[in-house]
Length: 245
Image (cartoon, rainbow, N blue to C red; front, side):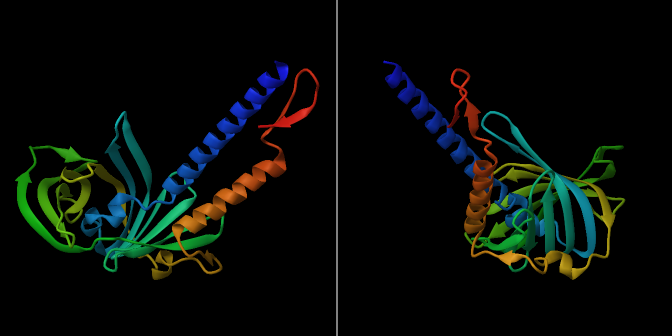
């Protein structure tokens, strides 16, 4: 009977470790997924001939709660760079070419990424003056409705708050008609003369064939590190023996 209980205990622990591993792997995969505002039609509204930096927050309504991501955005012409707060990944994106890279600081590596769709048309639909004294993210202005069409036939409609004090800069972008709803806020915007090399993979970084292969390598290294450090080992309080689960 004791043997049976021990087998059940170990099986349960193994199953729990397997579930945790799957969770961690899925978490790594999600972290390496390019933000939808970069790869999607919203990117067409963020390009700027003059370089700028801004603190960006994106809110996505989820099934049970709202998912919020905050990070730093750099833009130079059609080139974008985004790093989320407390994230190992940095994303580089060329809005015109619809291609880019995901960088991993932990691996000192990068992998190519691409969009399955391409923007074909950006059309101003309407303009609405804001109420007297109305401000968004600290900026007065007015709202415009913009429709962005892609080559797969889909059209996404955005409500964009254009700040009147910073050359109609889009300080808020929210979806009106879209398969995926979100609100994008840009704050602390500052014009900057950004160098082109910022939007290229750093010299000395290793190139991986795909984001999947890079995430797999990162996960394998983290798992090996845990085993080497004995982080999964526990002490049996009765016998004093080590066991793993």
